[in-house]
Each structure stands twice: as C-alpha cells, then as structure tokens.
Amino acid sequence: MPKVIVFGSMNMDLSIDAPRVPAAGETLVGSHFMTAAGGKGANQAVAAARLGADVRMVAAVGADGFGDELTAGLAAAGVDVSLVRHVADQTTGVAVILRTAGENRIVLHAGANHALDADDVVSDLRRIGEKNDILVTQGECDPAATEAALREAHDLGLYTVFNPAPARPAPDDLWSCVDLVCLNETECQIMCGVLPSDDDACLAAARRLRELGSGAVAITLGAAGSFGLDADGPVRVPAAPTVVVDTTGAGDTFIGALAAGRARSFSLAESMDWGARAAALAVSRLGAQPSIPTADEVGAAR
Ligand code: RIB
Image (cartoon, rainbow, N blue to C red):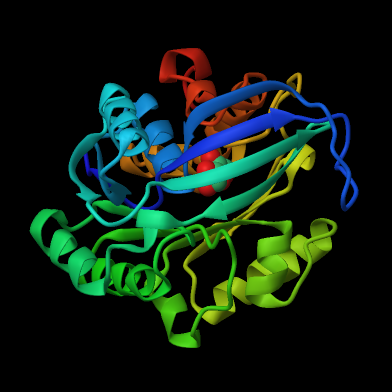
C-alpha cells in the first residue's frame, strides 16, 4: 500500500467553551478548558493512521514540553515521527481556540511550524517519497516550503492532497501540481473567487479549481456535508448524523480519510463518504486528535 507523507503543523490546542464571543474589553467565564494535541497537519496524520494508513510526519516542534508531548502522541497513534525536528530556538506551535455554540474560532502562534524551509522538505521527500505515495499538506507551515513540497512531490510522481488552510492565493502554476484540493467554503472563495453557497455554486467553484489545474476537488460544507468533482463527475455526500460537541479537527479527520482512502484505492466518492462518517464521530467528542476515530469505529467504506 502506498504510504501517506504529511508535511504540516503540530500545535498544542488551548481550548475553552464560552457562552458567546466576548465583546472588546469584556471578560467572560468559560468552561471545559482543555489542552489537546492539534495542528492541521498532525490531525490529518493521526486521522490517516487511525484509518489504517502507513503515515510519515514531516514537521518541526520546539525543544519544549509541548513538542515532546505532541511527538509522543503522534507516535502513539502509529505515525512515524523520525522526521519531526525539535528546534532549539523556537517554541512549539500553539492554537488558542474559543468554542461557542458548536463553532470554533482559532488564533495561531506558528512557532516552530515555520522552521522547515523548502530545502528541508524537498530533501525529506527525495529521501522517503516513492511513486504513488500520497503527500498531504496545508497552509500552517512556511508558504515557500509548502509550495516546494507540492512541486517536488508532483515531480516524484506522488499523489498530492492540498488543504489550503489558512487560505492564501496560490500562484497559478502551482495548481498543476495538485491532484486533490480539499477546502471549506471560505477557503474556496479565497482560492478561486467563488463562494460555494449552494450546489450550483459548488459545481462552479469546483470546475474553476479544476480549470486552474487541480485534478480533483472536495469542498467541505459543515453540516451540509461535502461536494466533490473529479474526472468521473460531481459527487454530493451528506453529513452523517451526529451530536455536535466540538467541531475542532473535523475537517482534518475528513482529509485524513481522503488520504487513507486514496492509499486503499477508494474512489473519491467512497473516500468522501468514509470521511463524512469519520468526521461525524470526531465532532461528537472533545478535542482535535483525541476525537479522531479508528477504522473499526467508522466501519467499512461503501
Ligand atoms: O483544524 C483544527 C486545527 O487548527 C486545530 O487543531 C488547531 O491546532 C489549528 O491548527
């Protein structure tokens, strides 16, 4: 089975429930404070590993307690962490998360997530990447390193999955190095100028992303499910029924499932359905990585 290589972020999430978003200058009393392993890259790596993929993480943390804890957690989830660097003069990435009424708002401190440069990532990919492996990357690391990862992986014959989160416009010529772009509504608007507000707009956005050069597209729509488009045509997958406890990491769980599904040669539609069921379990539990389900919990793809 091809392996999944994730170049991405590792954050310690400091997360609290609040009755509402406080106004400027206001102090509110929150509840259910927790620290939990997070970071979009690490969450996607854990999701792919819990769903049975052979996963390598390319990342950097600080030489501090959070870095040690996050690395140990990834290893415990079955992810190979031999390419996670512990950088002496940086602090580990942190995400401050405010949870209100089933939504979350996140402020990031990138810290060591920006420590790896293009040369580091290219050399890692040349060392471990093999044709048909899957590269997964997002927007929380150094932008030049992220672009270089997509270009190098494409040149090496890997299947590339790009989650532009946080989103920033990409150079036009990067899109031909992307086999699958997975993004939410706001990211979609930033990346292609179309807000996917209904099925027609989803189709228009996905067509635009394919015209730019991406091989396939998956747009996540929260409680409305997801919309996909590849050479086989459009796919509409409803969200699986759930009780919303914490949405942190749900999108990452979906993306991890897309990567693990690709490793098992699932179609885009099968992977999206599997991802929807995995994400539904993730939102029913607290925290990012603690909430990500195993393949046994999700059940077989269909
Ligand atoms: O996608 C959720 C993740 O975004 C959190 O775990 C947080 O670390 C931020 O990176």
